[in-house]
Length: 334
Image 1 (cartoon, rainbow, N blue to C red):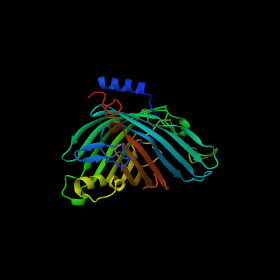
Image 2 (image 1 turned 120 degrees about the vertical axis):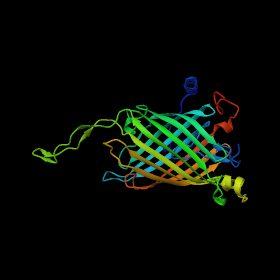
Image 3 (image 1 turned 90 degrees about the vertical axis):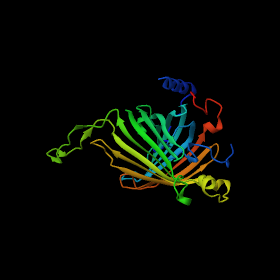
Image 4 (image 1 turned 45 degrees about the vertical axis):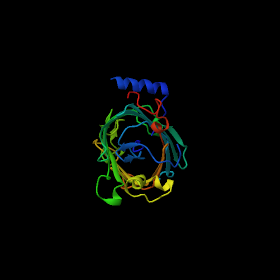
């Protein structure tokens, strides 16, 4: 899921089936986890701030992000809650379409609360390579932002973007490292190409003139081209129990995956308003047969990212485990 990473409006079933067909032609809470991206004995869970390395039938409902910004000399701090949802539909066993949207609630102390939808994102994704023996997965995708599909006063861009993206996952179970074999890493790297790149359209006036102070440079309403990346370091207790050493942990603890995720963005446009950002997200994921629940803190790692903590959470459903014999839970074309 792209929470970094990257939030989502549900697409009606008829439109979804039509779109996926066109593309193709061109449960118990404490049960062992079966999904979701699998390479040999390794299960890669759905991470909270960026997408997992493979494809499957699944849905996030809801996902949420909370951030608090400083007042910056204004009327008070800004509180923002982003409610997101996602639907992933496999077209073939190795390809999928992913739909994301979200609803933002922004509140500044002393001002009226602003609400609105985010732009819709549609991703085409191909799980290109899987090596079961070495617990390795690699995928390629293209993320398309539909410009103007969200609410502009809450920050949705008027113009869209396209982001070719690569994904990977690697488990350490094939290495002779004992109790560290449950470790795994996942990650993604993408380059966002704005439909309309930001450009300077007027030079700033002199700092001081006979008519008063100078004015700032003026820019068009374009957006930045940018690099974006993420990676996670995770320790799978289910893998420990089943593949390394059974410690006899109870069901809840035996299905936990503690992890830390790191995300970064770096502008590639000459007139970017924000520099490179880094965020850490330590937390844990609980895996069950029906899906997973995750909760992480959001910790800014540099000044450009901010100075206050946030939080991200997720309830995710494994549709291919819940509905394995229906079109909801299996590829349209086998």
